[in-house]
Image 1: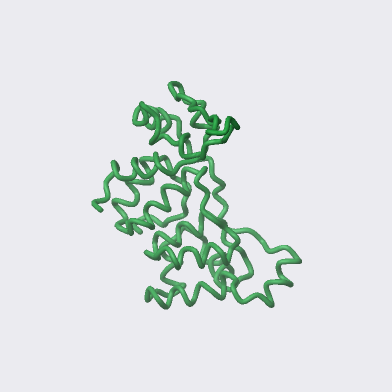
Image 2: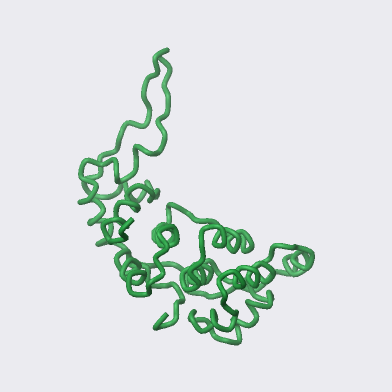
Length: 207
């Protein structure tokens, strides 16, 4: 697949699922969500009818949505472990600190090299790597992109931190597209992120 902004738009229209936000767009046509069955009972249609790709003027609505987008995601790079987490993680096999080195070996990178590619203070990055701090979701997304990880590796890191992709989140949809299409060129990656006003990912300049 030739990755372009148009292909990102198509993906986004098929995937983005914040239906409250979509339905508030001027011109959005709310489809019938309940239809009568053959036996006369009412049946609820699946959510696919609500996506922008099913709208008669989907491209116009997408342009309207883009014009309103502002990145309001938290910019914190990490969070501290609670007392309970400190205790339970001592026995867990699949923490970030234990999964991360295995992932890096498969892509031939070191933790120090990754630390140079993300905008996290070195003193905090060292603690994230050691497992005494938990990377926030935005930090993990940045790691996935700058390391060029595949879908399985991305899932492993996400699971280790207790995160998952949310199709109602603009940032998550765009990053998932980049990972699935293996868009790791900084220029094209940043172009796609800017197109959807994703500005809070802690990716170091030049990477």
